[in-house]
Length: 235
Ligand code: T5A
Ligand code: NA
Image 1 (cartoon, rainbow, N blue to C red):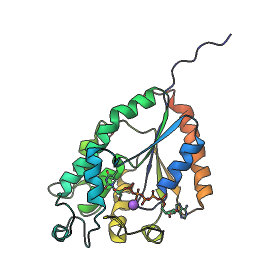
Image 2 (cartoon, rainbow, N blue to C red):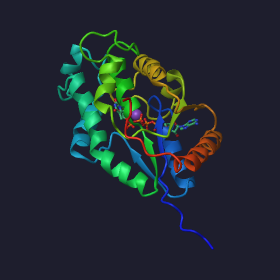
Image 3 (cartoon, rainbow, N blue to C red):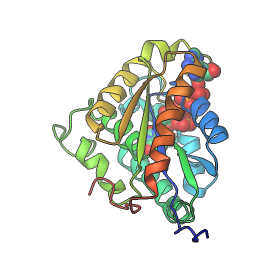
Image 4 (spheres, rainbow, N blue to C red):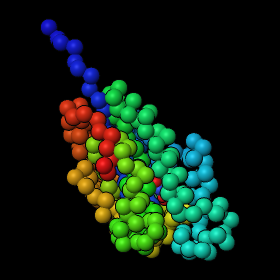
């Protein structure tokens, strides 16, 4: 006689990496292959904060995104601190619906999360160096607004050197897509690495990257149901 199964939560899987590393390609493939899964992305450009963020991103800045000359471009004059908090707000807007999905047993796959939030802003503050920067934009300052968000079970870091990513189609269309800046983003990501991370070589052929990720993801999905969902990111 079969006993009713206890409710089993879904796994929370986050993809991170520099611009054009191949995350969107891989998140879509994983969502298609992993049963009972759903794909989300940050920034979520469909919300009110997302519309401001999308407008901000779509204006490439000629020099450093944080330099005063950025004010001379047609982009809205949002200080680095303000856009950082909007990116975080954009995640908090979705937090309750993400946890509801996970608790209901759906595996949630997310294209970028708080790690991107911290790494991209910290890169404006002079690189990955946490705490060394006066005022805002040090890594600890950057992490603060995302503290307490749902904690991923797995962070898949799709590793591609900035020069390789830059050679890919469509590069340079958005604000942050310059090699020197992406080097700083990669350095900041390296400081954010924790025990949930798996680094995947994103320069391998798409199908090979996919097989590697799917194997790891299936292991995490099998284990996720045995552990409570955590809402204590960086706490
Ligand atoms: N940001 C984001 C912040 O500053 N703070 C935050 O809090 C958050 C959440 C927008 C920007 O916002 C920043 C980070 C970003 O700069 P986005 O809209 O998600 O973020 O933009 P990207 O993540 O950069 O999306 P992209 O489309 O540019 O890159 P993907 O998704 O990494 O790459 P993908 O899959 O589209 O592939 C790029 C190209 O490479 C090819 C693809 O065919 C495509 O042409 N490709 C491969 N080529 C060779 N080998 C492979 N294995 C390949 N995989 C894909
Ligand atoms: Na991009």
